[in-house]
Image 1: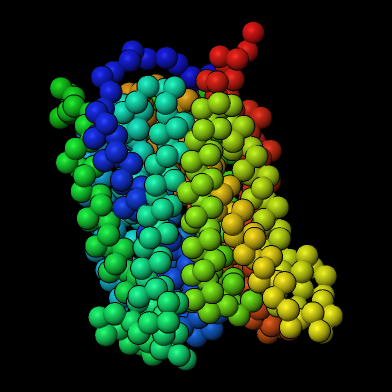
Image 2: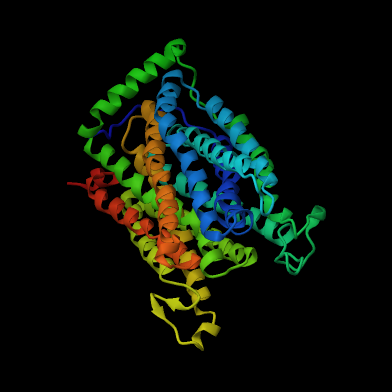
Length: 468
């Protein structure tokens, strides 16, 4: 197996560690506002011609962005390891992500030509996700291995709090109902944002861009980076050679290979659940942006708590245990979500009088809370579990392969949902738009189960240390 100890480096100062953690705070609004709770459901319900078509187009755009990452991340990660510093790479992709997020402002309701918005969505995914690859690769050089679980969990928890604050800002002061013209707090939108043109929802893009620039800056200024290697001039050829060697020997590294395969499936399932949860609630349950926003606030609160507790559990029991239990919880939640509509709970049709109750909404809110908690835990623990598989000088390449393993199905997941939704939406099948959306999300369950089945091949250092 590939788990190996390395010489202890000089670790970062407290300011450097906190600056690195702020990057998760800076980036989380992209996932909260754009991918999940505000822009994605707005795009599906108001920009596209109908919700099913919107879900299909969103899957294509985010899938293409993931495909670009899958193709290039291992190569660039290996080159970065050979060259040394990770910050220049993180900065370059951050610029791409920031510009693309800003461009989402131009996604007006009922847009006839969505080509520019389609490209902007794909590039936003590409830039923001790639910036995270290089930020994550800095983690093992900041603190000793014994503190990595707590560091990762605390950073994810801080990120969820950032997502929560940004979501409250958008829903409370910017995004207003077209019918009432009021925000979640009953206020008129600030800055003269027009509810009829959905400017509050569209403003999530520029806000995400500005938020990222402001809060990612400390990482670039204060977090120590790996020194440039003497052989940096030949970094491209060296990085490609080392990547080729890693890929050739990867099937022999049972734990490392098993983790990449397992995470490829369960992370994609989680990403799809995040990406399509708001769209599903809007189309199937008929939720407004305000209701979806409340759902998002709840998920971010439980996500912060789950990530923090997961970090402590990681430190006590190891990241593999945290990942396993999180997958089980997420699978249950996914089934709960798919089985809930305005008239059904757990696939059981309610009586006509029961349809007047809020039981489906309550169940969906409860599922969202559990998804947030388990999602925060699994993402934090996965970073630690990956670090357990490689030496410190190969960690950027490892996170590049980690991005590849995730993005290899991050484009397959959304595309499978897009194709499944498109298939079930055919007129010949006679299904409604809501039924097509519901059936189109079912590939997520299978992805979670495949990821769980591959986990027994993965080892962690806690398990190695506890073995007699």
